[in-house]
Length: 322
Image 1 (cartoon, rainbow, N blue to C red):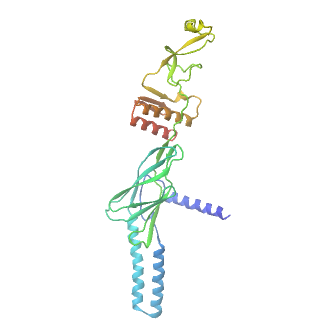
Image 2 (image 1 turned 45 degrees about the horizontal axis):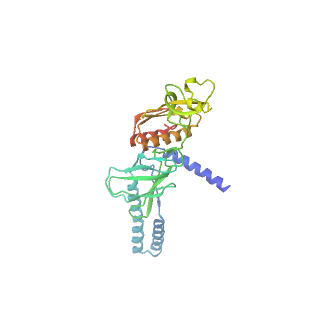
Image 3 (image 1 turned 90 degrees about the vertical axis):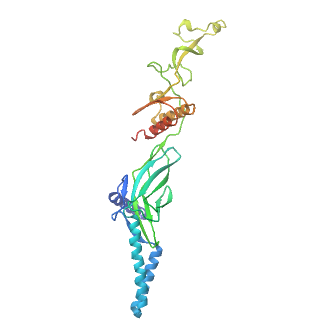
């Protein structure tokens, strides 16, 4: 019962925050976004100040009045200065990394302000990364947040807190921030049978297990058992003289410029096709071979090298999301 009430309260708070502090690519903190509470040190100082004030009232001590009002004024100044550290601060999305599923992704944010002054150290707090300390002694600062890429697609940070206690540590100013930024995770490479295509036709059903050719009549590939309908010209006569009825099988090998196509992996699901495309793209990249990519919504021209494999990885990561 208690857990149910707690979940409902959490949902209401999350809904209120989403309405007041919505998802944005760039957020400028102002009085509508900043919250302030005393720290434990500030609360203790306030209690001491109130006790001294009561003593001053009871004993009519001018010195006690002075000490009590001095402590309270410190708290008031701390509230003002700590609020100024967050007020006017802009938090903007910069970029997200590209990683393999299971790796650690990074999103980059920029803290900036028109006023160049020492704002102390900000604490960026979120469950995936814990606490990241961001010192800001000038006009801007860059922070990188680490996220676990558990599945293919966008890796986005959830709503997180930005806190500041500078300069006295007596009060804490914070804001809940939800930034529209994403890293991307591409699938793990998995080897699946890849069928190459000749002039408008698929592989024959009896083609040997070779992923880099199409059935044809140009080059000798192997011998296979005779089947009804095979041309007499393809009989392997030396084997026939030994009472073995086999025929020669010919192929048309692909050119050096490979083409990875979506339809080459018929019968596989989308995620399996993406994993297979990654496998062959990585193989061509390691062999320093040029290749092209054709998949729904993506057409990459023939190229090779690091830029081409990066384009392929991003296309695989963004498939179905962009």
